[in-house]
Length: 104
Image (cartoon, rainbow, N blue to C red; front, side, top):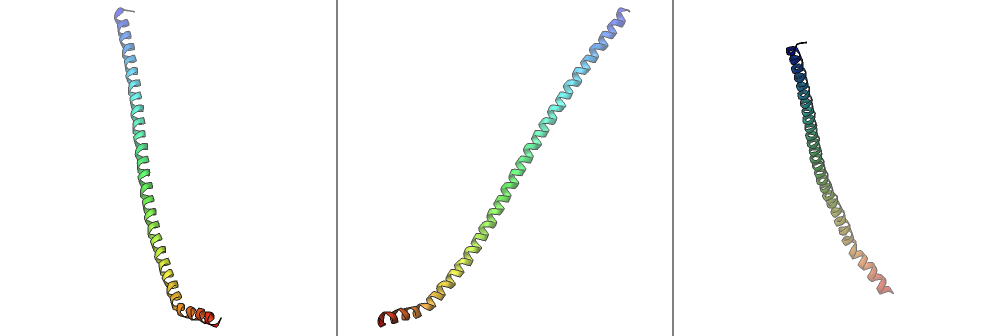
């Protein structure tokens, strides 16, 4: 084998090794980039989920506050009605008590 042929073979082997190393580096970079992009998507999804949870909680709290006010208003009306009935019966109760005290 001539020196020139051996030189070409050596150069071809070095070129092949260089290409393999370049391909391996490129593959590592692609994997790294994909992992970074995946992590960014996970973080974005987590942030969106947290924002949605906060919004849902705020809506639930608002509904609960409205319902609480409705119930309080209903109970105030019921209480006022009971007070009105009690006031209407007060004169009769006073007469009954006075009649029993006087007759004793």
